[in-house]
Structures are given as structure tokens and as C-alpha cells.
Image (tube, rainbow, N blue to C red):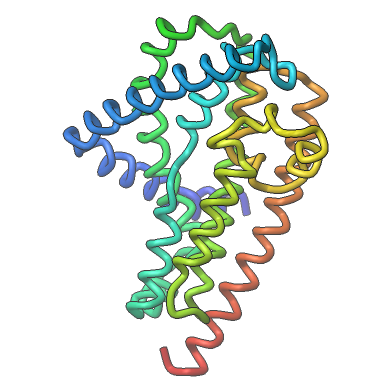
Length: 269
């Protein structure tokens, strides 16, 4: 049983490797991404430095200016965009899915492997393009090795959660002419409720408590928060919320996929 599982998993790891290799081959795009990240980071430094001065505050939600800036930079490193939504939507609309579902692998796991194959080199590029200038502009961030390993785990769960949200929206193309509207809702929800634009620590207390139990903060904000202000009790809470949403959304994605494929079979593709 274990040998069979390992053999099946090899093809998904191979898909990750292929996507990583393809992604890092575009050197011009890498240079552009580095320049873009440097510009965005400079804007954040100026914006939140002015915010702290205007409010005459030393902390927001227990986080000082340096922690807020590092929080936003780490969030930027984890932000992966919406490629999975586009890929799945196009496969369904073009009819290509009728061929891919007959291949000897899970359709959802195939896209999950492709997602990581694209995400890993981008994360590596973002780390390089942000870490060095952030060190000189903001100052060093002190993180223990155990806290860093926990951050890696929580970031992995957060990005898995993001993938599930994306593939659910992509699979909605079985019933919708275009999923752009749903993707727009997800994007805006992640920006506002996920801490991409304004750190959740700067929101009113009541709103913060509500957001903590939604999936959006668990994607980027919570892993970044653990990185800049590690707390073991907070870690346990974040992981429980992440796993709960992964189970729920994983079930929803599988249910939608099976129903969608059934409709394709009934209607002849």
C-alpha cells in the first residue's frame, strides 16, 4: 500500500519540478518582479512611517512600526495571484478538461502540484528581492529556528487554503459563462479581510475577532504574523482554523468537481 502511494506521488512531485524549471527560465521576468517588489516595499515604508507619525502611536495591535512593515513584506512574499482560477476556467470553457480527466492522475492534485511548481520559484524570487533592501531600510527581524519552521508549516497550510479557494472558483465554470466576477470577489475579500492592504492589527477589535475565523486571514496574514510576533497559543489557534477550512473547502472542491464532471458526461462533453 505504501509503495503504491509513493509511486503515485512521484508524478505529482515531477509536475512540481517541471513547473519550477519552466518558471525560473524567464530571466527578464525575474528582473521585472524584483524591480516591482522594490518599488512596492518603498511605498509601504513611506506610507506606514507617515501613519505612525500622524497617529503619534508606537504600536498598533501590539505591533510596532518595524513589525508592521515586516508583516506587510512577508505577506507580499506569499501572495501568489490567481493563476489556478484562470487555468481551470480555460480548460472547462475550451473543453480540454474532457481529455485531462481521462489521464492517470487526480485532476485536483494535478493542479495542486502545478500551483506549487509556480509558487515556489516566485516565493524564492520575492524573498531575494525584498529581504536585502528590507534589512537596510527597516532593520533585521529576529526569528528563532523553531519559529521559522512553524512559519513554514503555517505558510504551507495557508497557501493550500488559497489553492482550494481558487480551484473552487475555477470549477464554477461548469455552470457559469465566466468566473471573473467570483474571482473579483475573492480578490477584494483577500485584500480587505486578509490583511494585504491594511494589517488586521490596525482594525477595530470587534472586526478583528470576526476576521480571525474567516479563511482569508489564514492565507497570508496569520503566517506573517507568527513570523514577526511568534506566540505558541496563537499558532495553535491559527493551525486549527486553517485545517478546519482546508477540510471544508477540500470537500466542497471535490463535490463540485464530481458534479461538474457528471454534467459533462451527461451532456456528451
